Image (cartoon, rainbow, N blue to C red; front, side, top):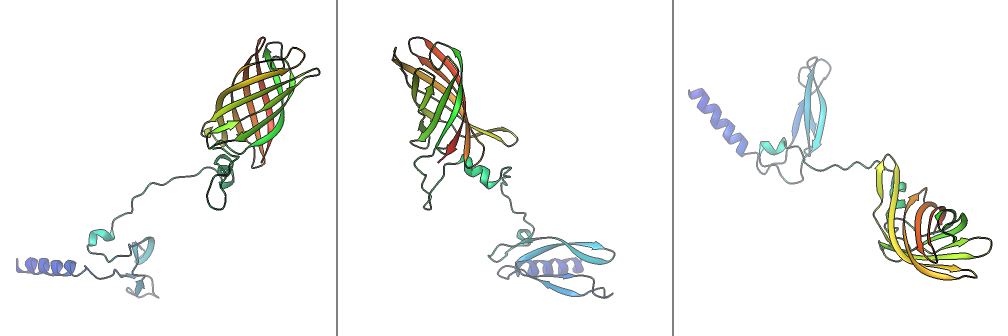
Length: 243
């Protein structure tokens, strides 16, 4: 009974003395056949030991906080936190986030869907008698106005006349549905103009996606519905040079 009481008092005095003292761990390791060979470890590091064939081996360590340790329990606390795994390379991420200057300000001509571009493509007409309803060569472009808004002028070229589309679009955040495939959708509306002998103009609805190939090129796929003399619908597939 007296022995137990004495042990309890000794433990209480020892644990209370820990406060205000920086932690220092002394371990034993293999030392030329000796059973005990003291080795001092940095006072900022706590180690987990493993007994293997009568030799103690360090198998894990972690850093202690800078402030002094007040309780034994704090020595065994495992830091908690949220880990985020990036499956993409920094180069690929930079293609999707709006570029910034050296001061961290967004570059004017980009949006969150990616940089502005100028390129060429083909239109595959589905309905209508105008350029949108026929197969034609297309000059495609995107110019960022704000982080979420772009203007996307395009020119449809046939043998005898051209059509001009001037839509303003809302650019959504980049999407990554599977693997490394990424795309940025957008939707908007504007005006369509047929500049031929029977010139006309009317409303326009457009929707599409931008697919970054690299920091230099972007693939664009868009559906355009124009309300001219007829209702014209076409699908454009193009590639643009980023700037």
